[in-house]
Amino acid sequence: MKKFGLIGYPLSHSFSKKHFSEKFAKEQISDCEYELYPIENISSFPELIIADEEIRGINVTIPHKLGVMAYLNHLDEAAAEIGAVNCVDIRRENGKTVLKGYNTDAYGFEASLRPFLKAHHTKALVFGDGGAAKAVKYVLNKLGISFLVVTRKPAAGTILYEAVDAKMMEEYTLLINTTPLGMSPNVESCPEIPYESITEKHLAYDLVYNPEVTKFLERSAASGAATKNGLEMLYLQAERSWHIWNS
Image (cartoon, rainbow, N blue to C red; front, side, top):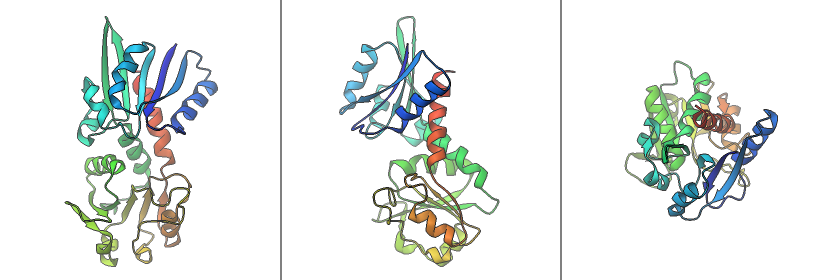
């Protein structure tokens, strides 16, 4: 039996377990299972890997995306540059266990964003500068899209929401929400920007996927923007993990 799973804390609900359990059933994959491993302290991670030699791959969620890196042998380029890991590949050969960390969020975001990009999407406003923004900024740099990070509190290298005016909105036509604003149950919240300055040239991308149409996307669409939520990104990053574990 090959085991895969998710570490994090707490793990009250999991997209990953549902996704992979349904995948195994649909594709009649009988020799694999996906489990939840609620680890409060990341120092317990090595013990988990040693205790069960059937574990072949691990997804990583909050709060361990950074801490898990100390226990890995190798990192892929995206994980190293972003400074966060959400997928660990485990290879056991000749009595040795080798762990390599990946960031599949970057892959998921890029693959879901690319089809919507147009030639004029050369500048982006990134709302929020937490962990989710790391993969977004990595992808924007990779695609050659310049960006400004917008935050509620003053921080180095960012601007405040009050600085986002009509002139800036005209210039920055890619809008990306990496904050939890609008996520259920707080569905009425959204980034405080001048939505009246949005046009059909804008693309609004929200990493939030519950609800599927957030207030940010609703208000952007009402002004003519193309919109995209984070649901496909979630599926793509999960399938990327599966590819890594089985390649």
